[in-house]
Image 1 (cartoon, rainbow, N blue to C red):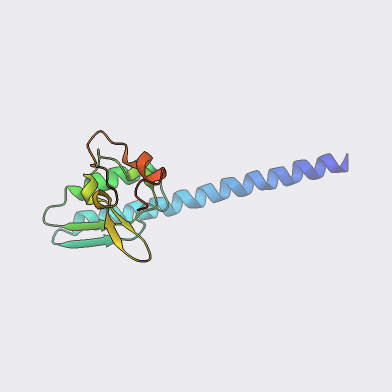
Image 2: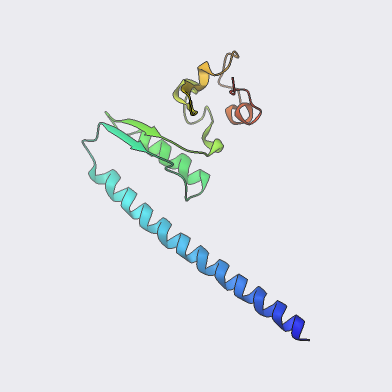
Length: 134
């Protein structure tokens, strides 16, 4: 009987901790979005923008939306880093606009393979299969 109570008690604590963590993540995400929107609206004369791991704390669909918004900024060169392979798609950018950064070098996706990349290629699938490992 005591064992069942402990099990229930620990399960309940774990569930509450998970809910609390989710709430904290939502609050941090909300603060980030508020800041990002404010910055996007007020930064009208930015010519170069670099954001490291810009999508580290949110859903990949939101990351894609942010890339689409940043692409519309006039007279601004944008460099974003990410570990998110879902962003490797021709729908967002051409293959020559993607780069792979390693310890030794920076390589354009188009130059990282002997294959001629076309619009119909699934870049994420090619990347995951090791096509661009050289």
